[in-house]
Image (cartoon, rainbow, N blue to C red; front, side, top):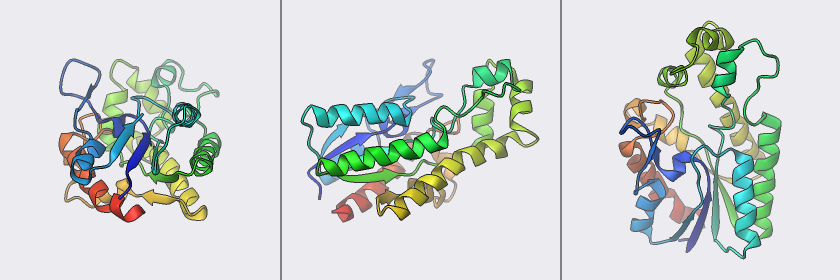
Length: 230
């Protein structure tokens, strides 16, 4: 079992949930990795941040090693925010040719590779986690709150939920392809959650964050796979 695990991700590995209070989001004390930590006994350095895109995760990873940080495993989790759009801009002008995902796919894959290589150069094994699948209809309703729904529908096309799911899946498939081609250990959390009897029950009302039950489910995946990584 790895003694120390460092984590660089976004709100999903931070343990964020939505729809449980008047706040934009709440962070659970027991996220998926902290639950697994109690059972497996590893030291956890979780530097995941709500809303983070992969370039911000890279800066935190670099800073960790620059300050002499040591870990047996580095877990990298990103893609949900990278593949997303600034919906306020879409709402204002859906025909703006400058609209693009927060992190273009080519930049996303380049930075992912740089993070993997940095981890290896510092004697740490990189582990990449796939992103849980969207509940696309819930996510569409969420991004339209306070925005011009007609314009967002115009941007996404005839089947907006379907388009949202495809955008999210495209980044995930490219991430998986990268891991296979470069022999990087991958934890396919998306597949694990989709194997649940009804994965929708594991997700918050916003359709993109797991709920408390979802994080507990993710913990069982970590508990099974982390001892096998080394």
